[in-house]
Length: 220
Image (cartoon, rainbow, N blue to C red; front, side):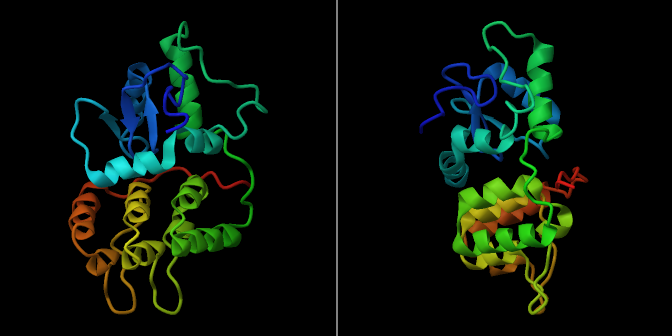
């Protein structure tokens, strides 16, 4: 995949690790920083040493470094930042860059001042099954946007993705801490609409992914 021949964070050649929820491939040095961020921000796997599910492989293949950088580094140059030089940068420089990108979300575009518009775009993207659009929107979503329940049926976008059997979008939503326990007007959680193997995957993920109090970065 174009762009995946170098590390997403420092551009080192031949990356051997991946952040499966960010959909990126990274080098061993950046992967050690990602581990420090916590799994609620980045979930690290080795491309060669770890076992991968088909869904995990499909997600990383569908997102990739180019899309990820266009989202997470959207305003980095305007703010006077650039990826560190992999050949000579210090650990501190590398860590500062990665934390700015993913923890502080310092380089996102200031484009979603209207949370109602953001919510509508997220719903539309999920309904269309547009994984890349969903990925691009999620960093801006507050818990209120992500967990919005349709007034007519109380369903969330997780319900929508599961009912449509959009496995990759459902996986991405869970990894971005959507509340999988919310019930619709029939008293059903999203997982109760899932078919195997998605049902098994969601059952595992929703038990292993508690809701984390992550910071909101919607522009004001």
